[in-house]
Length: 153
Image (cartoon, rainbow, N blue to C red; front, side):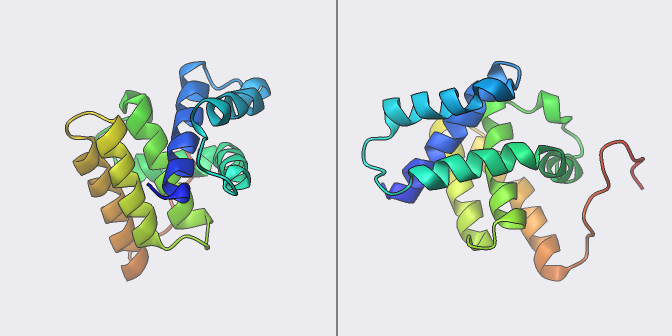
């Protein structure tokens, strides 16, 4: 397992705990540190990536969740399992907001994490949503979603 893959699983576990606890931003650093201490052996040099990614996802959560809502239109964001929801958040963040990560890498990593931590259909679910998003990004056929308070067209 590569250091970056392990780092992404730590990001997912941190976001999962944070989401499960009701998204208390005040304890987020402690959650990340706890997960790093418990599962971070072997990710030397990736600790900053973990912190930066978690913080960026939380900072951009409304925009990220708007993308998920757009591409998972039959699934209200709160009805998506905690694991799948947070894997999708990582994938969307890496595809739309982190230019250092190629979109295909973000999708493949998200699918692998979903297969490991999610349910039997999580890999297919994550692939379907991120794949549709990637298709629209590469075809430039879909504009960025409106904020959640705007009516959908």
